[in-house]
Each structure stands twice: as C-alpha cells, then as structure tokens.
Image 1 (tube, rainbow, N blue to C red):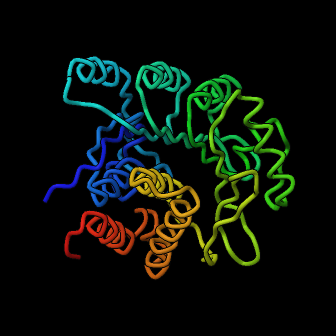
Image 2 (cartoon, rainbow, N blue to C red; image 1 turned 120 degrees about the vertical axis):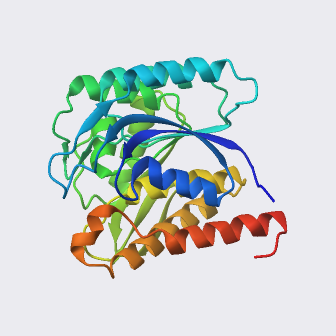
Length: 287
C-alpha cells in the first residue's frame, strides 16, 4: 500500500555525501509516506565541516526553471513546506516570493544563520533582513538561541532562562510581524537538551537526555520529523515531543560510532523505523 498523506516542499542544501539536510529530510518523509518535491538551495560535494573545502554548485537557474515547470502541473499540490539552510539573500528572496503564492497549511522555516552568539561567516545584515522577511510567512519557526536573538533583537546568552526566552519569543513575533509558532531548539535544561516554546499562553519544554559531543544534522532531522507528525494532525505538544525523541534516537545510535564517522551525519535507522511504524499504525496496516 502506498501512503500519501500529503505533499511537502523541501528547500534546503543538498550534500552529496552523508545523511544531512535535504537527503535526511527526503528519507524522513519517505518513512512517513509523504510525497516530496525538493528545491536544493545549494549543492555541495560534502558538508562544510570535516572534509576540507567542498565543491559547491549554485542552483539559482534550476530553482527558477523548476518552479516554472511545477506551476504548469495540475497534479502537483503542496500542503506543507520546510525551509532549512539557504545561503544567499537572493535565494531567500526567491523562496519568499514563490512560497507566498502557495496555499500551505504549514510552513516551517529554520532560520539557519548563526550559533554560539554570532552569525555564520559570510552572512551579513542584508541576509538577516531577507530571513526576517521570509519568516513573516512561516507558520512555524525553529531558531536556536543565537538565531532567536538575531530575529528578536535581543542579546541572548546560551544559558538564557525561560523568562528571558519567553520574552524574546514574543519580541521575535512582534518585530517580524509574525503569527508563527516559535520553537527554540538546542536549549539546555537540567542535564537535558530540547525545545522551549509557547503554547496556549504557557511556556513549555520538551527535551531528552543530553549526549555530549558534536552531531551534524540534528536541526534538519528535528524539522523534518516535526512537519511529518504535524501532517498527521497530531497536536503541537505531541508532535514536538515525538520529534525530540526521534532526534535523540539518532544521536544515541550515532554516539556509538567513531568520532571520525560522525561527520557523515546521523544514524537514522531507529528514527526511520519508528516513523514507519507510526505511519503504518495510522493506516491500520500491520507493523
């Protein structure tokens, strides 16, 4: 039985090696039985860390041709979208203009542009302005602490408490004229790591045990899992908790691999198994 709960548009970078970004998202949505269409914002021979300087390919011309073709297809409809790493202001602006024409029930924007208190190298105020324009059309935003600070105008420390994060979430929505649900990722609390977000007027936390080490692609995996569960009409709290657990499963398996192998991305075996089991259970199929 082919399960197609919905169709999702993926817009993020494509690494030709490993399980990261668009490749991980496609695998996750396949396990959910969700049809996908992908706009690679940049093609890289490898990810940017651990392999030397990757070869990159601009996809600008392809993006324009692809959406022109898609617009001519009556059979291709999206009800959700996910945007990860983009890289250039012009591409962010293109995505804003295109996504604004679509009637998406859910649009998740992961404003990938900084960490550890500063923007990534090569990004500037123009890029931030483009990201701020893009998040205005989002229904869900998943910044880390640094990105929340950039979007809200607040100077947030890595160990910001819940009250400070809650105020920054409100300022982020006001500053960007956004009604989006803001889910702050990578927050450390009491030996765990997870998300802080507002729901029903209350600040909430969803987390898992912290596994020390550097693991690539956790944000990409979280976003894809969250959109997948939301597409099955789970309530926000349940969808976030399941996404957090899915990331923990992947990090837990990956932590057993030699550090030299972690640069290839996360071990998705258990996460994908649980997604497929959930999906088949929703359809009444045998697991």
